[in-house]
Amino acid sequence: MDTRSPQWTDLRHHGDIDAEPGLLDFAVNVRGDGPPDWLRQRLVDALGTLGRYPEVAAEEAARDQVASRHGRRRDEVLLLSGGAEGFAMLPRLAPSRAALIHPSFTEPEWALREAGVPVETVMLDEPYRLDPAAVPEGADLVVIGNPTNPTSVLHPAADILALRRPGRIVVVDEAFADAVPGEPESLAGLSLPDVLVLRSLTKTFALAGLRCGYVLGDPELLARLQVGRAHWPLGSLQVEAIRACSEPAAVAWACREADVIEAERAEMVAMLTEAGVTVQLPARGPFLLLRVPDGERVRTRLRDKGIAVRRCDTFPGLGPDHLRVAVREAAQARVLVDAMREVL
Image (cartoon, rainbow, N blue to C red):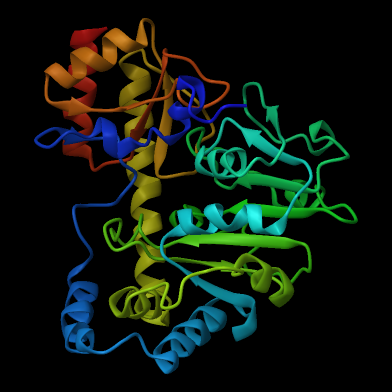
């Protein structure tokens, strides 16, 4: 497939494109407009390190903290410049046939197709639940999101583990796992030789502009991912942020935030449903998938009213009548719902 064609160019359409400056932003799945005060101060305090190259000791300390957070070893942790960097590394695993579970985040498919890896799309129909048997037996790399963006489906860990086969690597995108109270279906704490778990810290901690994340997995797989990687791949502030966000107090803060998200999501679902909007349920992520008639017109009218929502026709398996909205607090949600009542 030609990744330059419009069909595959759309794979790189993300919510930040829909969220034009000045709009009330429901298009980007980031909590707030910046990190919490305690994290902001931590980064300010680290500014004095910028005159030096990133230190090995600081990187190791951050890996140790991530490892402790998930009950892993340091050599099972690879720090990333945002979760998306992990997807860009996947072609280094040299898969002969990759299976992408869709609808889902499109960056892994872009990276694999651009590298010339044969990709097979496994399309899930509503209610978008994983059927492990639907994945081709010949796939030696399988990528799935949990919870899945944009459907907000949380797949049972047992179903994901059922994807394992001899000679196959399973990659789980857990970018939004910390937004689910208790992280009940996460595989981050399991040391398995054939499972890679990618985590992002940019959503819950509002660090999208700093690009922070990590991948957990077998040391041999992590070594393969790093072949050809640039020296000093992360800056000092990224390393400090990853360490800070993995400390017990920060994890406890994120747990409280997950409870807030759950309550806000329930309130948004009730408001949208009462307004006659179809919401894909059950939803467990910090976002909701909606279906509305004449979706492109609705999205354009909402933008005219100062509200940004995420178009979803760029996700394989979804069309222009699907929209994704981030979970927001009640006052902002009411603005969205009132506008949708007028538009619909």
